[in-house]
Amino acid sequence: QVQLVESGGGLVQAGGSLRLSCAASGRTVSAYSMGWFRQAPGKEREFVAALRWSGGSTYNADSVKGRFTISRDNDKNTLYLQMNSRKPEDTAVYYCAAGSASYYWLPHDYDYWGQGTQVTVSS
Image (tube, rainbow, N blue to C red):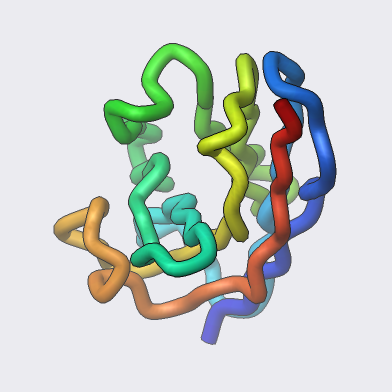
């Protein structure tokens, strides 16, 4: 089992920055892919970014390329999402996920999920 706890959400003005953290505990995540997803009210859960823990390859959704950066801290077993140049349409609950994730952009390919953290961008 892997436990994931997100933190760092909040209210930010458009154009501002915010960093989300996802602390992993329990089973090691070194063999997993980890990802960030988001879900706005009335919409489906959407892929944001993913990272292969072993090797460090990263992937970003087109909507966040050039603005968001996913990274990890091996010593702290923590995943991050640095979000810059925020837009109102980035408002959503952001979730951290871990799993074998052969198809990293698909939510159902992940086995473990955090509880989510709300991010609101005001215009």
